[in-house]
Image (cartoon, rainbow, N blue to C red):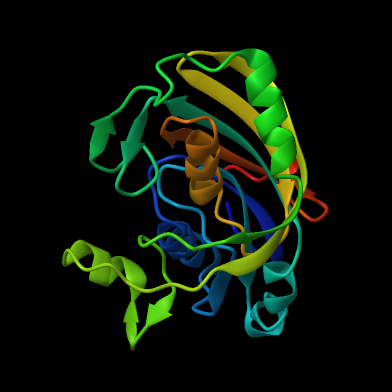
Length: 213
């Protein structure tokens, strides 16, 4: 497969980093100037926008501000230091002693729709005092990260059977689904982390049209 200069809707499978996908596109295109917009964590999958060629990498900034949709699977009753399945897991039951009902889950999800303040996770690429937050977290330090305004346009329950909760959400740029999962867990009086995350769209780029390499 030979990739010409342009902007591509690439499907990132679980496992490789977003940078790994950029390296793969470099090999397939023979072009050094390759970049991506909107990092996907290694365990996540779905739409990854990759540009090939200087005239197209210059356009990547516009995609960083676009709305995105995700399908996320949460595991309730436990937490992870990274907020996802790749981290150190700590079991914890419900603080109320009862498992939330489907009706309670639906009611909690509704509370998150709209503009909310979200604190980025410690395991993120945000710069703190000249270092990436995740680098500080790996040293056992707690980076100070200020809350940011984000918008949850929709948050739909797809399925729920304790301890697994599956949701679909449309969000503004800058939203961390790992943090949303943790906050949902806290509001349900338990803990939660992500076991699966699929980015199904970035603006008009849809996962069912993604190019699999």
